[in-house]
Length: 268
Image (cartoon, rainbow, N blue to C red):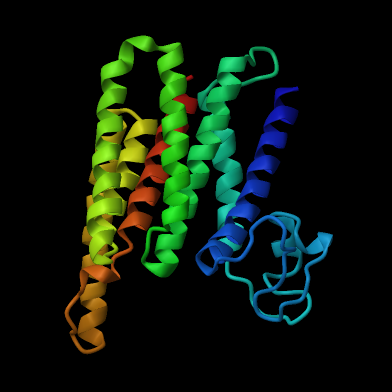
């Protein structure tokens, strides 16, 4: 029975992954992500049911559109697989099974999925556009505040911790909304700080430290790789705008959580 449950969870994760790829493409372009039917971005042909099966459609179609034969980016397959795996890891970490499933575990699982959704959308959109999308960031903030209220209900002794998070949110969002926009400025650093505050809300301080360490390592590797590439292509200076910091921060979170979940699986 547990095998069937986890198979359903994996499939659900892959379905969410398919939605993530759609949302990453449409949200920055202000295209409806709910009502508008899926279509090929190259030939605009409406996709059928057989074109939309997570993971399997990509494999059976050979990574190409059925209609125009344009190659489909591997990102679609990677995100669907990654989402399915992470859904399963979240469930195993929470010790969800058919015999011990209760309301608290179910609510925690739902919050983690909502959090992962914000994490993936913010990260991948930043990777593509070098921008942290305000709408998705607002969604992440709302989810984290709801999670904070939920945690306080089940653990009321942590009020000071949550008050600090709330104060940080208020300061950052007020700075972004009232001060910077007054001068028509978009501050990437403020958005990144809000994103990191959201991350800390969902993980403890120790895990946040690991995420920051990996984040710094990724940035150093990015600088080294770009430096080598720049030397080959003219040795132009590296600009901060070229760094998808939100992507690296989000992926650091994903990598650390996967690593810790896998370690927990072997310890159990």
